[in-house]
Length: 328
Ligand code: UT7
Image (spheres, rainbow, N blue to C red):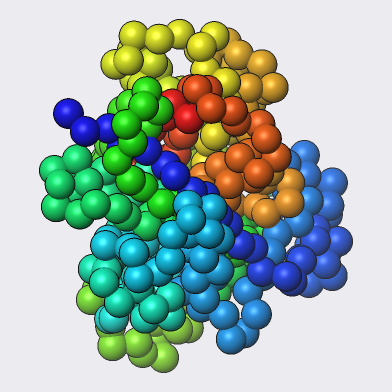
């Protein structure tokens, strides 16, 4: 069986920084409340002329450079996003054009905050089956465009960014050892973006007045508890499947939903936070983009060396969750 590995990583976050102190000026909130409840200090906001494909383009170029490849080399592009430039064409189609990836076929995956792991699993299958020789998997989100800036309970969480990886067959012991993905559609109505789909189109004065085009979090503290449990279960599933223990894992790179969720996960797994990569303080929750942005940061900081085992895990709207165990 072919083994598929990550041969290059890249990421990009927009220049504009929005701090908790900036939010204090427009909301009844405080840096202290946001930081203690979420671990977030600041987040990035895309420029008005930047859509998801623009962020994705820069992240992808950096990943391709790291892989020593050019856009024309790419055969498959999968973009995870819940904030594509447009629903038709797909975000990935815009990216394909902007990159000049003239030999690629491109498509989007919608799996909210777990999108990167879902996209990775789809790309891995195509490569294992030999349909394509390589793939660019990118997650890009402009979450700040979906945010109701008057809803202090949720708007403080989100930020914009993009991360990308290049996948290819590898011939040594490195590569993706397992990917597990799960969904629970029956309980998906706690994290939702009700407007913009066929249920609420055409957009009407009424749908805009009802703020249906903004992200809603219903019973957020309930999804907090589910998230802790699902993150831990996803990690355990990957360990059990591969017959390894947490001691053998160099770094867990989780979706950055809330620092307290990650601390809850670490407690449930019985590990210290030193094993858990955290950058939520600087970027907030960038939905599907958090995992590849964190992965790229960890790689570029030298936190991951050849041969290390790393565990990616995510949980989000859908509900969706999953894991990927990778030997670097
Ligand atoms: O990425 C997908 C996965 N992510 C999630 O599932 C999100 C999970 N949920 C969370 O991260 C947390 O539930 C939140 C950060 C959204 C909220 O934290 P919490 O500790 O669950 O707070 P809460 O909703 O229970 O609110 C506590 C209090 C309330 O006041 P009262 O009713 O106790 O008087 C809120 O009105 O804090 C108030 N509050 C705020 N105060 C200052 C809510 N938002 C704010 C705010 N600033 N921004």
